Image (cartoon, rainbow, N blue to C red):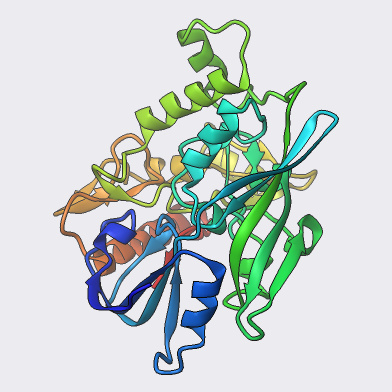
Length: 337
């Protein structure tokens, strides 16, 4: 464990924003993390995971603590389920692929989501009809006040759409150390009717899908729509899909007959933010070295050398325009510093 000064965070955030951290350290164990947190000479500390849900708009005047704790453990098998603990620093997609090599089902629809395991519960990541909460059992989190590890059950995480207790009342108070998932070992519940999965399976010539082929279909779909952060800087979906009242939706339908929706409850529907942004004319727009991706309007991109303030300004312009046209507020999904 070595603390470094004036380190660029360009390779530690998927947007590829080149800002300087005043101090930086990568921790590989719980003991190292506790030791760093006890250092009184660094008053300001900033916790960094996979950097996939982060837009940096200024230098970080703090000790950046990179959570790099690795490891995967099969805790128990019972009937047709298995409990697996993954440490916070594990890459999410690589972890999903590992579960599939063991024929453990549940996470396949969330293949290729960027980021690390430790940050996944914070925003309850999800894709193609599946959310993390569906296969979440518990997580271990370090209390920053007591430096003791506490266990959070599914109920105590209070998961919502791209939300959890860690984004609300417990925000900034805990660091997730590991996550336990309850996956299936047989009689997998296949989620293949959401989005383009079924048509992609048809294209692949798959008539009897497995968790592995669904993962392959999801990867193919995501690669066709979303830019690889290693090639074009981005954080995946920048905005959440807004949820509005059904009565408001019916009013919108008068002016926008083709507006899509997904039922949330008897009184609410979810509107695809990508459709709103594309209809407002932003899809594929470029502004010097940044813009909106040509294949997916939800994705803001850094084509190289852009700064976070420009991308933030673009996101705010999109929000204002969507509200002006549709009277709908869309919320950023990424964390902005």
